[in-house]
Image 1 (spheres, rainbow, N blue to C red):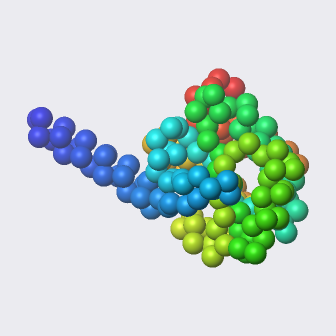
Image 2: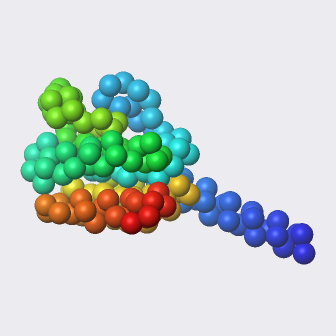
Length: 162
């Protein structure tokens, strides 16, 4: 009986590791801090937001994402912005993030390696992971009001009563 319990725990543990490793990546934020997705995930739920400067819906959504981040970061939420612009746009990306006072970390993915790892097709793309590394919500695009549904999903994953 103990052997069966051990095998079940081993299987569950391997599934968790597999889910995290499928999406794992290492990068550097635009303010030069090294970041690893699996390490961020250890702190709690993570919302990964893929965006670009040329994408008007992406830019519109970011102020709402920042408000959500500030509201729930004490509950363990991390938001990670993944910019899809070319390397020559880095100064513009930094200026945009600074001027719009975005408080969550932002990395660049100019070759779309991370975007492909997440099976991205279009931006803006939001992928919400629970604290166990499971994808619990995915949303492509942005229309005003989408942030309400996103916040509801975040509250669910943070186990905050609606």
